[in-house]
Length: 163
Image 1 (cartoon, rainbow, N blue to C red):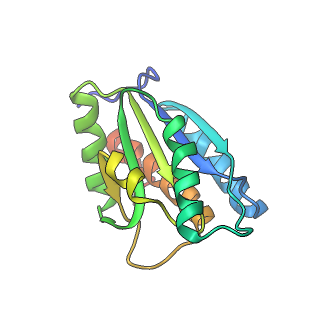
Image 2 (cartoon, rainbow, N blue to C red):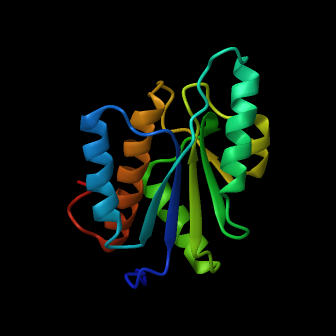
């Protein structure tokens, strides 16, 4: 098994708004730095739409337009949504390897805001994942997916991290 350590893969994490909880922001930064040992990593903090006088649907559509404007022309769009497929850490590691073997070099990880994502974003997804049957805040989901991607590379490297 060849592990791509030459930073050939790139992850773009698209986040709506800053991570407000400092302990989560620290965890996200920790796993961003760890993941950088295996891939290029960029976190894009995009404009979060404030509720105001808008309906939930209007907010989700405005956020969708912002997210869509930051999606690259090529690569995999990995979307987190409660209705998505659940994978074990091992299966996520296998999926990453399959994408790399197919020549994928860029993965955009898309996480919605507190209201979730619009259908237009889900329609752009190459893979829709759910982290759990339980509900996490969108800020927690940011850290969890970064940790799981780091774990996926650790599984492939056969380190003791996954134990």
